[in-house]
Length: 175
Image (tube, rainbow, N blue to C red; front, side, top):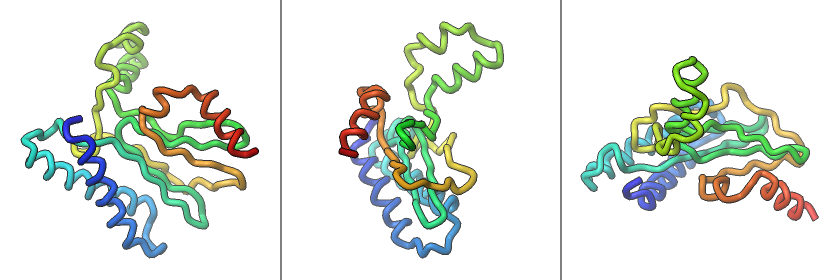
């Protein structure tokens, strides 16, 4: 999106400001949502300055790990993966036009080839700066096990590397 680099920096700075106030007593889900809401608001102000409202922003993922486990949030098509016992699981859902197409397919309104071939499938439908149409967030604390690894990444990583490559890289790190 337009101004993406600066938007990413604004999102990180804003989220870090919110996290810096975390005392451990707040509700983790609310804290993560607050960080994204404030980032979204900051992004909208930045977009107004660029005269790019609705076309300026960034995707985002964040996690909070405490003694109880993992809390996560996502908007856009950046992802959070859990690697547990050599099984890589994507915890998030991409918020792009493909999501709407697959929902239409499941409802019986589209043929199967359309979600697979639509040239606009990767276009974002929710992002920081775009009003947060969709937010992905775990409902309950996710317990973590010894050896679990969490990967936060953009489509630049998961769109380039296969799951097998990500698993191989994690195996090499264990050596």
